[in-house]
Amino acid sequence: MIVSSLVIDAFRFIGDNGSLLLSETGQLAKLAFASLAISLAIALPVGLWLGHKHRGLFLALGASTLGRALPSIALIGLGIAVLGVGFWNVSVALVVLGVPPILTNAYLAVDGVDRDAVEAARGIGLTETQILTRVELPLGLPLILAGIRISAVFVVATATIAAVAGLGGTLGDVIVNQASYGEAGVFAAALCVSAVALGTAGLLGLMQAAAFRRMTPRT
Image 1: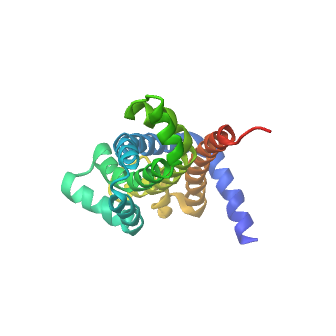
Image 2 (image 1 turned 30 degrees about the vertical axis):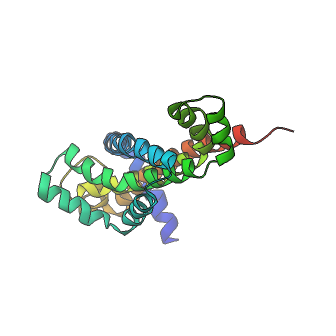
């Protein structure tokens, strides 16, 4: 009964404070997706190159372990202490959290491609770059997208902690300020965060499923 009442109050809060939540959600998405884009720009080329060369397994697995071990709030706090409060300063901490899943999955995706397919491509005269982009990347795409999806959800969820570090406008303002917005406001903001995370994960999941279908032989 209490839970159902809280849900009803949360939706009322959304209706009464739509512009506030929409603005905060937009800032959350801006911070999270900018950090995700930087993570992709850093981790994807490195992971693909290492996987193609079949080198750096320790780096790939170490990045994955590091990503799971790092406490998000401590990392953001350290970033703020070193770099100060600001959009891009918080992004640095989120990038550190977003890189490991992308790097690890990109490496494993390319490293695990059938060696016979690679040798066949090399035998018909494809360059190493062409082998990577035309053979290994398409075959490894589902696993690569899985890593991006994990990273995206992690970054979106963690971006709300930016409010604790002093960066406003990321729905975390509402979540950490129960005295001003009440339990209904906190729950409403949490619903918005969940919507962004689930929507992002769902879109990437559809892309991953489409990549799997392309790889599945038709009968």
